[in-house]
Length: 247
Image 1 (cartoon, helix red, strand yellow):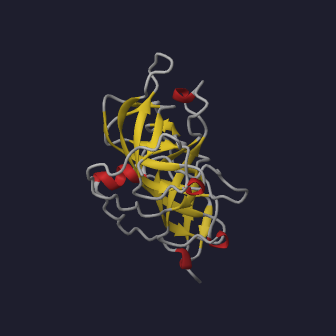
Image 2: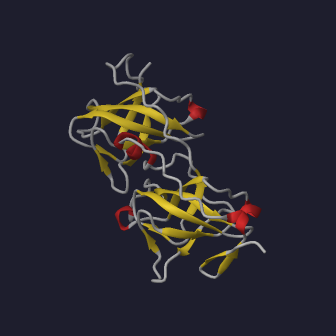
Image 3: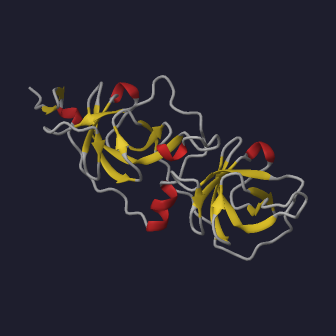
């Protein structure tokens, strides 16, 4: 008879033995990039995997580093030992209320599968970015892209094709040098990774030239949005600032 182990009432066969391998070591810059908001805002599908509850005698639904968490699917849903997943949080925080442009999806962190059977799995929390809670959903983990080395800006800003900053900072409405911001342009408008944008703001009076605020570089791109890193700024970057592509 195969040995078994019990996971909050879930019984798994020996083919689903726990696997407590170490998580990959990321640099602080890689962690910051992986924690940035996703550019794809499609949200969870109908059959998405979700965090259910802590694998702990003391019931709790907010999870921290190294917590063991029950996942809503197992091998029948394609889950395998050692797989890593981003944990996404869908919903607006109190910081978002009243801001039409704030993102509704955030990266709560990432987890790694350490035990699995046909219908459920156990994951360990490798990293938290914001509060990670029950019902947050999973997406396959992707290694953070390599960010191009900072160089002097090349090309003149194209003011005939202005984008807007839709999320200045993570879980807040402002950002500064080194932070990330999302703009409302993607591959449909020819935006590619490592592309540079100059950031401007309309501070008035009416008809006055836009005021230069800073410089960003594109990290990743979806159909209609791009994640950028702020290379430098005069003060802070705000939601609704303008982004002019350098050409």
